[in-house]
Amino acid sequence: MNQIIDKLRKERKGAMFIIEGPSGTGKGTIAKQLLEQDKNIKFSVSVTTRAPRYNEKEGVDYYFISNEKYDELLKQDAFYEFVDSQYGSRYGTLRSEVDSFINVGQDVLFDMDWEGARQMRAKAPDDVVTIYLLPPSIKELHERLVNRGTDSKEIIDKRMRLVLDKLSHCDEFDYIVVNAELEDTVKKIQRIISGERMKRVRQTGMKDFVTKLENEAKEILGL
Ligand code: ADP
Ligand code: 5GP
Image 1 (tube, helix red, strand yellow):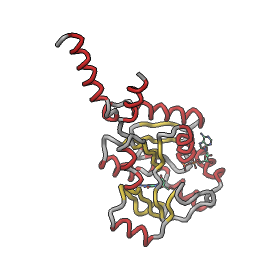
Image 2: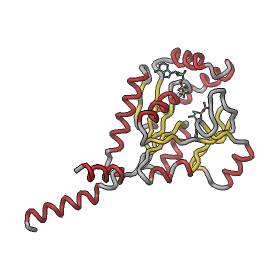
Image 3: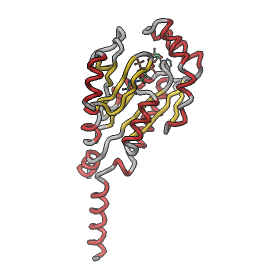
Image 4: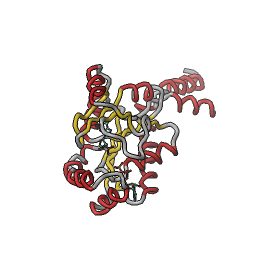
């Protein structure tokens, strides 16, 4: 019995979970917890032309590249999606971070903006699941940005000015979660992930399993 369940678990298609929301809402923090708690999710490391923050690691948070290298990757059609100017920097998702994983049943988690989410949804509508994260209030959002201690006042002001534009895209997303209590938010997103994994289109092994059940039924019924 366990063997059958194990086989079905392996025979599935991974999903692409995109988390978006105003900067400082908690996307990175939540992604980290989800990845720690669920080894079947892999983080898609994006490329960016911006400089690393003091706490960021090459190949973990981003692949930090030059503008020249970014142009080269664009020319090679290496991106699944890209956004050419965001806070004055360029970002992109490498194809190599995605396809080989979802095809073997591994889920992939993305931290990307609504523009990227739109491109991904257009390319892979059955595989993409989008989650919009909201702060409990704008005052709290500002405090989180300040307390994070990674950005200058100028950058924080810039991020705050983009809040209205960011919020206006919230209704393009499949799920909305308010990140008030961190633990509670992580649980809610884990529930979304569990539900999405149960969708028929992702349980690719089920077709054979149903055929097997049908054959068993026919045998027992003498058909
Ligand atoms: P984003 O990736 O969306 O820009 P971060 O994950 O960097 O946001 O979170 C911004 C700051 O808010 C961090 O210092 C993080 O520790 C804090 N934070 C995240 N979620 C919560 C929460 N639910 N309650 C309080 N602080 C939070
Ligand atoms: P930050 O510089 O704060 O890490 O990210 C700035 C913005 O770029 C965030 O909204 C983040 O979600 C978005 N972003 C990060 N990586 C990608 C990516 O690969 N593609 C797109 N479209 N947006 C990204």
